[in-house]
Image (cartoon, rainbow, N blue to C red):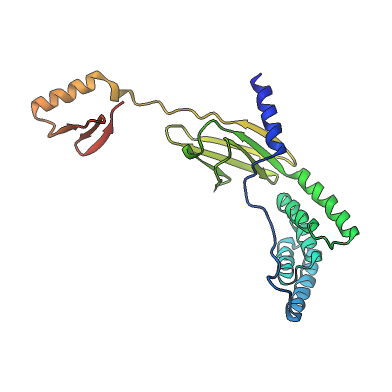
Amino acid sequence: MRALVLRLLMTVLLATPTIALAQYRLAGPPDPPSEANLGDARAAFVEGTELTQAGRWADALAKFEQAYALSAIPAALFNAASALRALGRHRDARDAFTQLLEDPLLDPETRREAELRRNEEAARVATVALQMQLEESEFSLFFDGVRQLPPANGALILEADPGRHAILIEARGYRNWIWEHWLGDGQRVELDVEMEPIPKKKWVRSPLLWSGVAAAVVGGIVTAVLLSRDDDAQYLGTKVTLP
């Protein structure tokens, strides 16, 4: 029954997911490009095309991004998305093709190709769905070393490109929760996070300890023990909270 409930919950989450990690999106020029900017954009576009022919996809991506920033030409965004695809950055490629499809003036042939590639890249993005019982303010979550925003209602979906990934959750009073796994193309993983409480130290509650403290007070070994109304104690300058 518990497994069935979790699957139903994740189905709802995947339909309206709370997605972590920033979306890839290119910004064009704030004003209509000048002739000089268009000339620089064409030069960057040509250089990027030559770099793709040499298999230097990372360098080509930088040139296509530069060309788009100067001109907002759809061809530059299409090639940037294709470079991301070649680099295995499928999540970013999906987002770039999605941005391209927002252009109402995109020609039909380019639109069909962009839709096809966007769907292919979306299918290759891996996801990790987390369900947590802790309040948002009680824990910190890190994905591949990057801290994530608190999830809504303890539910979070992390997107990632194929490869090895790690999740770390820290919460006061609990042992760290660590998950490491290799994610394949389009793999879907569902995790129910259960934090293990850290046992309280039993010596604090030991009557033998406090009998020893009392004896020490009588013997003059301890200089001062001050008990406050909220059950906090000041013991040789170290604050101790009593259970």
